[in-house]
Image (cartoon, rainbow over all chains, first blue to last red; front, side, top):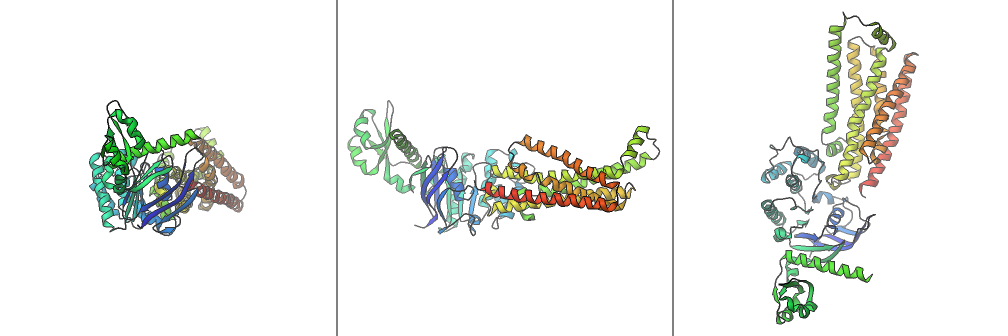
Length: 301
Length: 232
């Protein structure tokens, strides 16, 4: 499998307590990768380091098969980036974004930018007198997304692209993701972070689960769905089942949790009902598992 | 360099520069025309006559030009410094290749633009005053030189402006420097104008050179600071 970005032993240390890594991830080429994690897990930091926005403390990153820096060659020209907020100066108008992007990036298509804005219900004519600070969060995100999609890139790095969009626009964004990937015939890739896993599920071919600055699980979503199963059972079965379960939540009416698929037969003989997880269910349970492991590590210390 | 200025500031700085020249020229023209039309038959009060005798028009002209030179630097280079704070908070700029170097080019470009505006402003004002026989054409280069010195003196405070985080503190520094620059430049002019034209020109040249050296040192230090700070 070809990699679009390969991250080896990446470390980022801040003055505060938070530190990222060491992170090892291989983002597959020609696919869409979802970065999933709780707030403060390090998703934005990782994406910023990949795009050369933030400096790394240590580690190696390979871009399109070549180890180096984001400023080397035409790497930055090949990566489109969209921040979750504060992408452009607040006082700028849409035409300032278009002008500045066309000067800063060789492969920025101004006409395509305005066409994309019109498709996203942000017609430049209607909003030409308004600065970005006067637009709603959703509108600002649409402008940022249009600026990223209007460039001819090989990789898009999008930080929470669906966070401030309405459900309809989120659905259209997923379609746009698919179109972008398909247009490259295996050469174009997307890395995006999201908390709306259910809405973006169809857009994620590969998933990376992060917790507290570390990668806890990664793989193709279909492989991960084959690896794990979701369990539900009567609460009085807790003692028998808990040994085989990775995570376990028990209410007065139901026992539920995550287990490895290889234990499916055993769990079923013990009276558990199993189902193939959705990415959303899987993410929540894997985050619970990561939290459990972290807590036990801290308790041991 | 111009491309870098446009990437980070869009066309804002150019608009500020053109607007400043247009507006100030318009105000001067309107003021002089109105003054000439209505002032000939008016009898000045003895106090006003005394003030007019004590402060020659050349002095008022030079002080005005110095202030305008400083203001042009404050509006244009100050905006570029302001962009630094905005780009610190917005990520777009950092996605551009070698953005730190481009930003330094943008800063230097803004400084050059501000100095050109200072020259144009003082030139326009001096020409208008000469046309109305309020000053001699010989004084035009001196006025331009002193105005340029004032705008260069602003550049010295770019480095502290970049590292001072508080907006109020930056405003205070700009205000204090404005008074200091006006005082220093006009004092230098007043002290030398009673001597001869050459000395006045030389003193303006020395002041401009000293301010220029200070501006270069401050700019180099600012660029180093930006590069260090950019990828933190």
